[in-house]
Image (cartoon, rainbow, N blue to C red):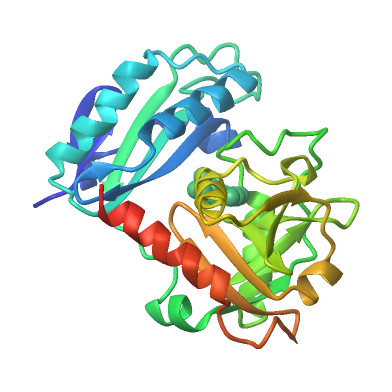
Length: 286
Ligand code: PMP
């Protein structure tokens, strides 16, 4: 089965799926995107992803040339055509083709791309044994410069943080905001557990309004575990009982060491385990 990629209403084979070198998505990272999961042939949290895509687009003055319902149907159609039962969807809307200057106003037609593929962000053993992360020196873009809720194509500072993680022999990094408070990881939200309560940085501190983060909060509520959106420093994470990251691609992954400090007893925590179990049940029963 060859991959069929959707570009502006037509499907192309992987080798033929190409966009203009004048697309401002390429030239300036000017565009928005979503990463979405397919479990058992069903698209997980499709409405939430479509809503976030349109909110991101509105915030950057990008007028998506389709109504939300048609966008949702295009995603479902792409999944069907690719016959994908379990996988990952990358939905991208770029500013479209225009002249070389940064002014987006001459870009007349946004480009809509849907790629249906596979994803495994981390090896299986990390889900079982937990992952070690570092704090990156690259900071999040301040919220008053670019709202962290905008899921834009511009990930350069996250990429820098990811490279720092790789150079330290880790796969992930925590990013702080300019005040030094914990914001999120390079492609995931972060949670910690202290005294049986869940804490995650207040999104204003520079975190994406994660759909998995929201799902985890709902699961926690159903388990009578309280979640607080808080102001967290590295000290709080160092002294946490448990820590984990959440994201569409990563799902829920335990963190057992940060900046050389062992978190809790150095093993994935009990509450983290419970949340992972319920999350699995939720995605398996779709
Ligand atoms: N933060 C960042 C920077 C992300 O790119 C993502 C998505 N990969 C997340 C958090 C997690 O968000 P979600 O659960 O909606 O995938």
